[in-house]
Length: 382
Ligand SMILES: C[S@@+](CC[C@H](N)C(=O)[O-])C[C@H]1O[C@@H](n2cnc3c(N)ncnc32)[C@H](O)[C@@H]1O
Image (cartoon, rainbow, N blue to C red; front, top):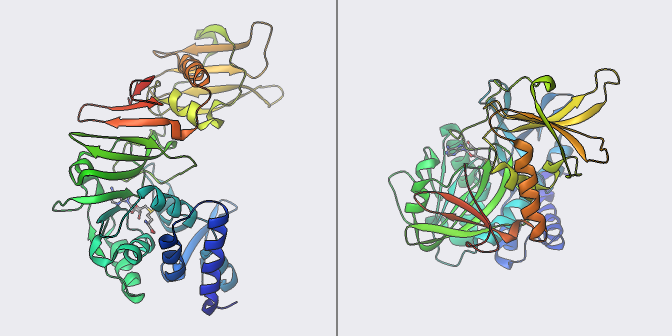
Protein backbone atom coordinates (compact mmCIF):
# COMPACT_ATOMS: atom_id res chain seq x y z
CA UNK A 1 0.00 0.00 0.00
CA UNK A 2 1.32 3.46 -0.83
CA UNK A 3 0.65 6.81 0.78
CA UNK A 4 -1.80 7.67 -2.00
CA UNK A 5 -4.18 5.24 -0.27
CA UNK A 6 -4.50 7.61 2.72
CA UNK A 7 -8.04 8.92 2.01
CA UNK A 8 -9.38 5.35 2.22
CA UNK A 9 -7.40 4.69 5.40
CA UNK A 10 -8.65 7.92 7.00
CA UNK A 11 -12.18 6.95 6.01
CA UNK A 12 -11.77 3.49 7.61
CA UNK A 13 -10.45 5.10 10.78
CA UNK A 14 -13.45 7.44 10.99
CA UNK A 15 -15.81 4.47 10.51
CA UNK A 16 -14.08 2.63 13.33
CA UNK A 17 -14.33 5.66 15.64
CA UNK A 18 -18.01 6.15 14.80
CA UNK A 19 -18.73 2.47 15.53
CA UNK A 20 -16.90 2.68 18.84
CA UNK A 21 -18.92 5.76 19.79
CA UNK A 22 -15.87 8.06 19.92
CA UNK A 23 -17.10 10.58 17.35
CA UNK A 24 -20.65 11.44 16.33
CA UNK A 25 -20.57 15.03 15.07
CA UNK A 26 -20.43 15.10 11.25
CA UNK A 27 -18.16 18.17 11.42
CA UNK A 28 -15.43 16.26 13.30
CA UNK A 29 -15.84 13.23 11.06
CA UNK A 30 -15.32 15.50 8.06
CA UNK A 31 -12.22 17.06 9.64
CA UNK A 32 -10.71 13.63 10.34
CA UNK A 33 -11.34 12.56 6.75
CA UNK A 34 -9.86 15.76 5.34
CA UNK A 35 -6.61 16.09 7.36
CA UNK A 36 -3.79 13.72 6.29
CA UNK A 37 -2.31 12.54 9.59
CA UNK A 38 0.75 11.12 7.77
CA UNK A 39 1.87 14.68 6.94
CA UNK A 40 2.17 15.35 10.69
CA UNK A 41 3.82 12.08 11.65
CA UNK A 42 6.61 11.42 9.12
CA UNK A 43 8.28 9.30 11.78
CA UNK A 44 7.42 7.82 15.15
CA UNK A 45 9.14 5.72 17.80
CA UNK A 46 8.15 2.28 19.04
CA UNK A 47 9.51 0.46 22.06
CA UNK A 48 10.62 -3.14 21.52
CA UNK A 49 12.89 -5.10 23.85
CA UNK A 50 13.26 -1.98 26.00
CA UNK A 51 14.77 -0.08 23.05
CA UNK A 52 13.22 2.74 21.07
CA UNK A 53 13.04 2.11 17.31
CA UNK A 54 12.33 4.76 14.71
CA UNK A 55 9.70 3.92 12.09
CA UNK A 56 9.55 6.12 8.99
CA UNK A 57 8.00 6.02 5.54
CA UNK A 58 11.42 4.91 4.24
CA UNK A 59 12.40 2.38 6.91
CA UNK A 60 9.09 0.46 7.01
CA UNK A 61 6.48 2.06 4.72
CA UNK A 62 3.75 -0.55 5.36
CA UNK A 63 3.97 -0.41 9.14
CA UNK A 64 4.34 3.39 9.16
CA UNK A 65 1.20 3.97 7.11
CA UNK A 66 -0.80 1.32 8.96
CA UNK A 67 0.05 2.81 12.40
CA UNK A 68 -0.50 6.42 11.29
CA UNK A 69 -4.09 5.59 10.32
CA UNK A 70 -4.74 3.36 13.35
CA UNK A 71 -6.45 4.59 16.49
CA UNK A 72 -3.16 4.70 18.36
CA UNK A 73 -0.98 7.31 20.05
CA UNK A 74 2.38 7.67 18.33
CA UNK A 75 5.51 8.85 20.11
CA UNK A 76 6.99 11.57 17.91
CA UNK A 77 9.82 12.93 20.05
CA UNK A 78 12.23 11.37 22.53
CA UNK A 79 14.09 13.45 25.06
CA UNK A 80 15.41 13.63 28.56
CA UNK A 81 12.70 13.01 31.16
CA UNK A 82 12.47 14.72 34.55
CA UNK A 83 14.31 11.84 36.21
CA UNK A 84 17.14 11.86 33.67
CA UNK A 85 16.16 8.85 31.53
CA UNK A 86 15.22 9.02 27.85
CA UNK A 87 11.55 8.70 26.91
CA UNK A 88 8.61 10.33 25.10
CA UNK A 89 8.48 14.13 25.28
CA UNK A 90 5.90 14.60 22.52
CA UNK A 91 3.39 12.41 20.75
CA UNK A 92 0.45 12.50 18.41
CA UNK A 93 -2.44 11.46 20.65
CA UNK A 94 -4.73 8.60 19.64
CA UNK A 95 -7.30 9.95 17.13
CA UNK A 96 -10.12 8.36 19.15
CA UNK A 97 -9.06 10.29 22.25
CA UNK A 98 -8.83 13.52 20.28
CA UNK A 99 -12.28 12.89 18.77
CA UNK A 100 -13.73 12.32 22.25
CA UNK A 101 -12.10 15.52 23.46
CA UNK A 102 -13.41 17.55 20.53
CA UNK A 103 -16.91 16.26 21.19
CA UNK A 104 -16.59 17.10 24.89
CA UNK A 105 -15.28 20.57 23.95
CA UNK A 106 -18.65 21.28 22.31
CA UNK A 107 -17.44 23.94 19.89
CA UNK A 108 -19.73 26.06 17.76
CA UNK A 109 -19.08 27.93 14.52
CA UNK A 110 -17.22 31.14 15.27
CA UNK A 111 -15.68 29.88 18.53
CA UNK A 112 -12.04 30.62 19.31
CA UNK A 113 -9.98 27.74 20.71
CA UNK A 114 -6.58 27.79 22.38
CA UNK A 115 -4.75 24.46 22.42
CA UNK A 116 -1.99 23.88 24.97
CA UNK A 117 0.50 21.39 23.49
CA UNK A 118 0.90 21.88 19.71
CA UNK A 119 3.09 18.79 19.23
CA UNK A 120 2.90 17.73 15.58
CA UNK A 121 0.17 20.26 14.74
CA UNK A 122 -2.33 17.51 13.80
CA UNK A 123 -4.97 18.61 16.32
CA UNK A 124 -4.45 22.23 15.35
CA UNK A 125 -5.15 21.16 11.75
CA UNK A 126 -8.38 19.41 12.78
CA UNK A 127 -9.44 22.51 14.73
CA UNK A 128 -8.52 24.76 11.80
CA UNK A 129 -10.55 22.59 9.44
CA UNK A 130 -13.56 22.83 11.77
CA UNK A 131 -13.34 26.50 12.82
CA UNK A 132 -11.02 28.29 10.39
CA UNK A 133 -7.36 29.25 10.85
CA UNK A 134 -8.08 32.61 12.46
CA UNK A 135 -10.01 31.02 15.32
CA UNK A 136 -7.32 28.54 16.37
CA UNK A 137 -4.38 29.29 18.68
CA UNK A 138 -1.87 26.66 19.73
CA UNK A 139 1.14 26.91 22.02
CA UNK A 140 3.99 24.51 22.83
CA UNK A 141 7.01 24.89 25.07
CA UNK A 142 9.31 23.37 22.47
CA UNK A 143 10.26 25.83 19.71
CA UNK A 144 11.51 23.12 17.33
CA UNK A 145 8.19 21.30 17.56
CA UNK A 146 6.30 24.53 16.90
CA UNK A 147 8.39 25.31 13.79
CA UNK A 148 7.95 21.76 12.47
CA UNK A 149 4.20 21.92 13.22
CA UNK A 150 4.02 25.23 11.33
CA UNK A 151 5.63 23.59 8.27
CA UNK A 152 3.35 20.55 8.52
CA UNK A 153 0.28 22.77 8.75
CA UNK A 154 1.30 25.02 5.85
CA UNK A 155 2.07 22.01 3.63
CA UNK A 156 -1.55 20.87 3.92
CA UNK A 157 -3.04 24.34 3.72
CA UNK A 158 -3.64 25.47 7.32
CA UNK A 159 -2.24 28.49 9.16
CA UNK A 160 -3.54 28.74 12.73
CA UNK A 161 -1.82 31.06 15.22
CA UNK A 162 1.16 29.25 16.78
CA UNK A 163 3.48 30.31 19.59
CA UNK A 164 6.42 28.95 21.52
CA UNK A 165 5.85 29.51 25.23
CA UNK A 166 5.08 27.79 28.51
CA UNK A 167 1.40 26.96 28.18
CA UNK A 168 0.95 27.28 31.95
CA UNK A 169 0.58 30.98 31.18
CA UNK A 170 -1.98 30.30 28.43
CA UNK A 171 -1.64 32.18 25.16
CA UNK A 172 1.43 34.46 25.44
CA UNK A 173 0.41 38.08 25.70
CA UNK A 174 -3.09 37.17 26.85
CA UNK A 175 -6.42 36.79 25.13
CA UNK A 176 -9.94 35.57 25.77
CA UNK A 177 -11.04 32.28 24.25
CA UNK A 178 -14.29 30.38 24.03
CA UNK A 179 -12.47 27.12 24.66
CA UNK A 180 -9.10 26.04 26.10
CA UNK A 181 -8.05 22.45 25.41
CA UNK A 182 -4.88 20.95 26.88
CA UNK A 183 -3.18 17.94 25.33
CA UNK A 184 -0.77 17.57 28.24
CA UNK A 185 -1.82 16.75 31.81
CA UNK A 186 -1.83 19.18 34.74
CA UNK A 187 -1.87 18.85 38.54
CA UNK A 188 -3.94 22.05 38.81
CA UNK A 189 -5.89 24.19 36.35
CA UNK A 190 -3.52 27.14 35.84
CA UNK A 191 -4.87 30.55 36.82
CA UNK A 192 -4.04 31.93 33.36
CA UNK A 193 -6.40 29.42 31.73
CA UNK A 194 -9.18 30.64 33.99
CA UNK A 195 -8.39 34.25 33.13
CA UNK A 196 -8.23 33.54 29.39
CA UNK A 197 -11.52 31.63 29.12
CA UNK A 198 -14.58 33.82 28.63
CA UNK A 199 -17.51 33.67 31.06
CA UNK A 200 -19.50 30.56 30.06
CA UNK A 201 -16.56 29.16 28.08
CA UNK A 202 -15.00 25.72 28.57
CA UNK A 203 -11.64 24.41 29.77
CA UNK A 204 -10.93 20.76 28.91
CA UNK A 205 -7.86 19.21 30.50
CA UNK A 206 -6.45 15.97 31.86
CA UNK A 207 -6.19 16.50 35.64
CA UNK A 208 -3.69 14.18 37.28
CA UNK A 209 -2.82 13.68 40.94
CA UNK A 210 0.84 12.70 40.78
CA UNK A 211 1.71 11.55 37.29
CA UNK A 212 -0.88 9.00 36.43
CA UNK A 213 -4.09 9.11 38.49
CA UNK A 214 -6.94 11.21 37.17
CA UNK A 215 -8.84 11.92 34.00
CA UNK A 216 -10.23 14.49 31.59
CA UNK A 217 -12.38 17.16 33.15
CA UNK A 218 -14.58 19.66 31.33
CA UNK A 219 -15.11 22.91 33.23
CA UNK A 220 -17.46 25.80 32.59
CA UNK A 221 -16.11 29.22 33.57
CA UNK A 222 -18.33 31.32 35.77
CA UNK A 223 -17.65 34.29 38.04
CA UNK A 224 -14.28 33.84 39.69
CA UNK A 225 -14.18 30.09 39.21
CA UNK A 226 -14.98 27.11 37.03
CA UNK A 227 -17.01 23.98 37.60
CA UNK A 228 -17.83 20.83 35.66
CA UNK A 229 -17.62 17.09 35.28
CA UNK A 230 -15.02 14.47 34.63
CA UNK A 231 -15.39 12.68 31.31
CA UNK A 232 -15.97 8.91 31.07
CA UNK A 233 -13.26 6.83 29.43
CA UNK A 234 -9.53 6.93 29.92
CA UNK A 235 -6.85 9.45 29.08
CA UNK A 236 -3.15 9.36 29.82
CA UNK A 237 -1.52 12.55 28.62
CA UNK A 238 2.09 13.24 29.46
CA UNK A 239 2.41 15.60 32.40
CA UNK A 240 3.07 19.16 31.33
CA UNK A 241 6.72 20.10 31.61
CA UNK A 242 7.11 22.21 34.73
CA UNK A 243 4.51 20.26 36.77
CA UNK A 244 5.59 18.45 39.93
CA UNK A 245 6.74 14.91 39.25
CA UNK A 246 7.06 12.38 42.07
CA UNK A 247 10.69 11.99 43.10
CA UNK A 248 12.64 8.95 41.89
CA UNK A 249 14.16 8.27 45.28
CA UNK A 250 13.65 9.06 48.95
CA UNK A 251 10.89 6.49 49.48
CA UNK A 252 10.92 4.85 52.93
CA UNK A 253 12.51 1.48 53.55
CA UNK A 254 9.75 -0.83 54.76
CA UNK A 255 10.45 -2.75 57.95
CA UNK A 256 7.50 -4.72 59.33
CA UNK A 257 9.19 -4.95 62.73
CA UNK A 258 8.81 -1.18 63.10
CA UNK A 259 5.21 -1.06 61.83
CA UNK A 260 1.77 -0.88 63.41
CA UNK A 261 -0.42 -3.77 62.33
CA UNK A 262 -4.13 -4.42 62.00
CA UNK A 263 -6.61 -6.15 59.66
CA UNK A 264 -8.64 -4.78 56.77
CA UNK A 265 -11.91 -5.94 55.26
CA UNK A 266 -10.95 -4.58 51.84
CA UNK A 267 -10.58 -7.73 49.75
CA UNK A 268 -9.76 -6.09 46.41
CA UNK A 269 -6.08 -6.74 46.00
CA UNK A 270 -5.18 -4.01 43.54
CA UNK A 271 -7.25 -0.86 44.25
CA UNK A 272 -5.31 1.00 41.54
CA UNK A 273 -7.20 -1.11 38.97
CA UNK A 274 -10.44 0.75 39.89
CA UNK A 275 -9.50 4.19 38.58
CA UNK A 276 -12.24 6.26 40.26
CA UNK A 277 -11.79 4.62 43.66
CA UNK A 278 -8.01 4.91 43.36
CA UNK A 279 -8.25 8.58 42.34
CA UNK A 280 -10.40 9.35 45.42
CA UNK A 281 -7.94 7.45 47.62
CA UNK A 282 -4.97 9.35 46.18
CA UNK A 283 -6.68 12.65 47.03
CA UNK A 284 -6.25 11.69 50.70
CA UNK A 285 -2.64 10.54 50.45
CA UNK A 286 0.55 12.59 50.41
CA UNK A 287 1.74 13.24 46.85
CA UNK A 288 3.95 10.81 44.98
CA UNK A 289 2.37 7.54 46.09
CA UNK A 290 3.94 4.43 44.58
CA UNK A 291 2.41 0.97 44.52
CA UNK A 292 3.84 -2.48 43.99
CA UNK A 293 4.34 -5.86 45.56
CA UNK A 294 6.45 -7.30 48.34
CA UNK A 295 7.94 -10.66 47.42
CA UNK A 296 8.16 -13.64 49.73
CA UNK A 297 11.90 -14.16 50.09
CA UNK A 298 11.63 -17.96 49.92
CA UNK A 299 9.15 -18.44 47.08
CA UNK A 300 9.99 -15.15 45.32
CA UNK A 301 6.25 -14.79 44.71
CA UNK A 302 4.27 -11.64 45.70
CA UNK A 303 2.87 -11.97 49.22
CA UNK A 304 1.65 -8.41 49.86
CA UNK A 305 0.80 -5.21 48.01
CA UNK A 306 2.71 -2.15 49.09
CA UNK A 307 2.09 1.60 48.97
CA UNK A 308 4.66 4.21 49.89
CA UNK A 309 5.07 7.98 49.79
CA UNK A 310 8.13 10.24 49.92
CA UNK A 311 6.90 11.67 53.25
CA UNK A 312 7.82 8.34 54.90
CA UNK A 313 4.33 6.80 54.98
CA UNK A 314 4.04 3.20 53.79
CA UNK A 315 1.87 0.13 54.14
CA UNK A 316 1.89 -3.49 53.13
CA UNK A 317 -1.31 -5.54 52.86
CA UNK A 318 -1.11 -9.32 52.67
CA UNK A 319 -2.56 -10.94 49.56
CA UNK A 320 -3.88 -13.83 51.68
CA UNK A 321 -6.72 -13.27 54.09
CA UNK A 322 -7.52 -14.82 57.46
CA UNK A 323 -10.83 -14.92 59.33
CA UNK A 324 -10.05 -11.38 60.54
CA UNK A 325 -9.36 -10.08 57.05
CA UNK A 326 -6.10 -9.20 55.34
CA UNK A 327 -3.20 -8.17 57.50
CA UNK A 328 -1.99 -4.56 57.21
CA UNK A 329 1.43 -3.29 58.31
CA UNK A 330 1.80 0.47 58.23
CA UNK A 331 4.15 3.20 59.39
CA UNK A 332 4.83 6.87 58.88
CA UNK A 333 2.74 9.98 59.39
CA UNK A 334 -0.26 8.99 57.20
CA UNK A 335 -2.22 5.73 57.17
CA UNK A 336 -2.21 5.08 53.44
CA UNK A 337 -4.47 2.05 53.64
CA UNK A 338 -7.03 4.07 55.64
CA UNK A 339 -7.21 6.43 52.66
CA UNK A 340 -7.94 3.41 50.44
CA UNK A 341 -10.58 2.12 52.89
CA UNK A 342 -12.33 5.46 53.33
CA UNK A 343 -12.41 6.15 49.59
CA UNK A 344 -13.80 2.63 49.00
CA UNK A 345 -16.55 3.16 51.60
CA UNK A 346 -17.69 6.45 50.07
CA UNK A 347 -17.34 5.16 46.51
CA UNK A 348 -19.35 2.00 47.36
CA UNK A 349 -22.00 3.91 49.32
CA UNK A 350 -22.62 5.96 46.18
CA UNK A 351 -23.01 2.95 43.91
CA UNK A 352 -19.43 2.82 42.61
CA UNK A 353 -19.76 5.84 40.30
CA UNK A 354 -17.96 6.11 36.98
CA UNK A 355 -15.93 9.22 36.15
CA UNK A 356 -18.90 11.16 34.77
CA UNK A 357 -20.50 11.30 38.26
CA UNK A 358 -17.43 13.07 39.62
CA UNK A 359 -17.20 16.83 39.39
CA UNK A 360 -14.63 19.51 40.06
CA UNK A 361 -14.97 23.06 41.37
CA UNK A 362 -12.01 25.37 40.86
CA UNK A 363 -11.69 28.64 42.72
CA UNK A 364 -8.69 30.83 43.45
CA UNK A 365 -8.48 29.08 46.82
CA UNK A 366 -8.87 25.37 46.03
CA UNK A 367 -9.65 22.52 43.64
CA UNK A 368 -12.49 20.46 45.11
CA UNK A 369 -13.57 17.07 43.70
CA UNK A 370 -17.12 15.92 44.50
CA UNK A 371 -19.55 13.10 43.78
CA UNK A 372 -22.86 13.92 42.03
CA UNK A 373 -23.15 17.54 43.23
CA UNK A 374 -20.87 20.18 44.74
CA UNK A 375 -22.59 19.64 48.10
CA UNK A 376 -22.00 15.85 47.93
CA UNK A 377 -18.98 14.11 49.47
CA UNK A 378 -15.93 16.14 48.52
CA UNK A 379 -12.15 16.11 48.57
CA UNK A 380 -9.81 19.08 48.31
CA UNK A 381 -6.82 18.47 46.07
CA UNK A 382 -3.67 18.17 48.18
C1 LIG B 1 0.63 14.80 23.60
S1 LIG B 1 1.67 16.04 22.98
C2 LIG B 1 0.57 17.06 22.04
C3 LIG B 1 0.02 16.44 20.81
C4 LIG B 1 -0.49 17.45 19.84
N1 LIG B 1 -1.71 18.10 20.29
C5 LIG B 1 -0.62 16.87 18.46
O1 LIG B 1 -1.67 17.03 17.81
O2 LIG B 1 0.34 16.30 17.97
C6 LIG B 1 1.97 17.08 24.39
C7 LIG B 1 2.73 18.33 24.05
O3 LIG B 1 2.71 19.17 25.19
C8 LIG B 1 3.87 19.94 25.13
N2 LIG B 1 4.13 20.55 26.44
C9 LIG B 1 4.60 19.96 27.57
N3 LIG B 1 4.71 20.85 28.55
C10 LIG B 1 4.28 22.04 28.06
C11 LIG B 1 4.17 23.33 28.61
N4 LIG B 1 4.53 23.60 29.88
N5 LIG B 1 3.70 24.32 27.80
C12 LIG B 1 3.34 24.07 26.51
N6 LIG B 1 3.43 22.85 25.94
C13 LIG B 1 3.90 21.85 26.70
C14 LIG B 1 4.95 18.95 24.71
O4 LIG B 1 6.08 19.62 24.15
C15 LIG B 1 4.18 18.09 23.71
O5 LIG B 1 4.44 18.51 22.40
